[in-house]
Image 1 (cartoon, rainbow, N blue to C red):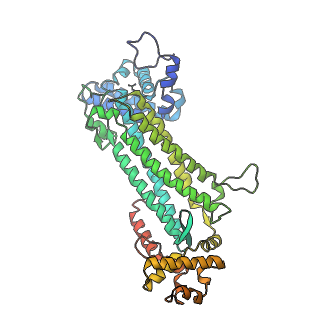
Image 2 (cartoon, rainbow, N blue to C red):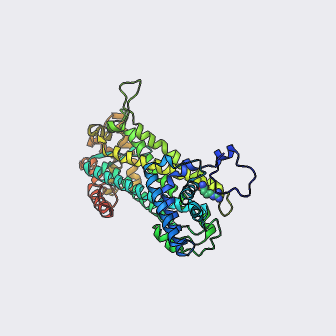
Length: 463
Ligand code: ARG
């Protein structure tokens, strides 16, 4: 039974070993170690300023915390013990080294305000690096759009060939999604950027500590307004998990496309060898495992968001130990999103298009049928009528096993007298794409504008 605990005066028996296993969280929350040291330093400074520590005491505590930071960096394993959590661990170490002075460090501070302040700091840093990965991904997609700027690609609805689009347009569609992810993470960052220190266990503290100064020294933009809210609030984690869930959904949808498009049955593109794997049995296989794993991990990240909401939904104010679970969801989400984003942008940077297969695919599914109808509209035929006539044209083409442009003009004229030879210029894939020159459409002119607008939205230095 461990003795490294911060309470015990009113207990006759130690905590049962099974309860220790249930409740101890050091293995998980040790990743907060450097934040916890910083929070302790900010708190020690506030205690000194409020005259609860002498100058010498403050100096000694700060030196001890700084030394611990170095040791945790260089030889962490020798420092972790049989501790309940990271806060307990650090308090034990400080007390071992500073004697009774170490016992003063907890004056006016509870693990409840401490853990959430640590977690806010961790979340801010994690979001900063996730946002950087997202920025790299946007850069890569814009590059890809430029590399294949004029390639015409089948566009799908219901995964049936629908209308031809530029491949670049397809890539830029995802750029929009990832820009929104950046915004969502930014909003989550703002909700994390508030300092809870000074809230105590739930009611605040008696020591008139300068909360603004503590927040400032830890790099927070604001302080929490209500101590009971501060120790019970996990909204910023929910916001981060939500931003992460949506982002993973985007990655997963893209991965689904990569998996389908790279299958030899479809063959529109190829994923690089460095992001595919072989089969232990079938020598010919090149499997898109990385894309599949990203798609797979999406379920896990979604699960964490739901798990957090479920953990929170029955909790009365203020702190409840259930809240300790929050970090399991947060840490696993951050780890998975980070590795998925890195793999994803590297994998995407290395895909190659199979332009012959793309051309062959375009010929399947009558992707220019709508443009045939649009041609009739230009000639003055009401769209619904034009739609019907074109349906009949497609039926003939299917029966004759031909493309629309391979049908004879005479045959077409039997369906509507206004159909003329100029129809054949109208229903090429190039013409179909170029005609979508509306803002946000797939015409080369529109896509060029999209790219220049995106370049103006890229506020970061290209990676
Ligand atoms: N390990 C705890 C957590 O993560 C720290 C706070 C413990 N507070 C308490 N009142 N038992 O939530």
